[in-house]
Length: 193
Image 1 (spheres, rainbow, N blue to C red):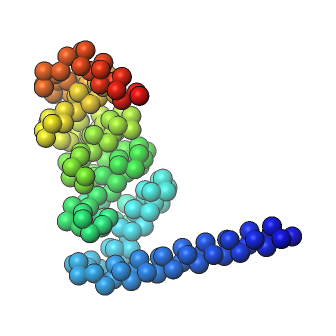
Image 2: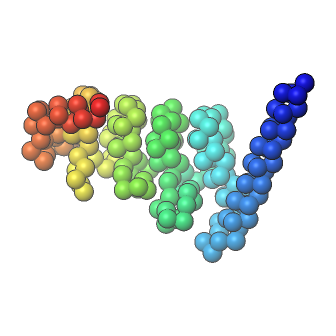
Image 3: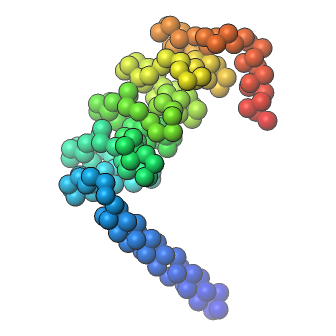
């Protein structure tokens, strides 16, 4: 009986913390000096982000069918307020391949920037979302090496041979920075440790 009471008290405390956190988070958002979008759009974007986070494809489909703006950035933090994730960026970054493919098939921009100095292709390769990576490449996503990052080398190190081949067909090869098979093997072994 005592354990049951303790479990109920813990559940009530957790619920109170969640409600309080949501309330104070809402107050914080409302009081910031960021340009505010109409409440309906903000609610739709918030719902879309939550649906993606929960991997709820049905909710994403519902929001898309009801006109949510796929290119409006989510306001993820003060640091990224000018460059937040778009729906597709968030889906790829959150490792939600089914949702990412749905968004691409419904016109989401594969060229949109992703915060953290990376690209959608980087996260698709990292999370082994081969179909998503192919769709990003086929739809004109950023594939060129820059800032020391080479997507073909990344794919080779990760063992994503089909992606390496697709990138090679587009002129991006794994040894753009004079990487050898030996260097790739060394990098693979380092990553495995």
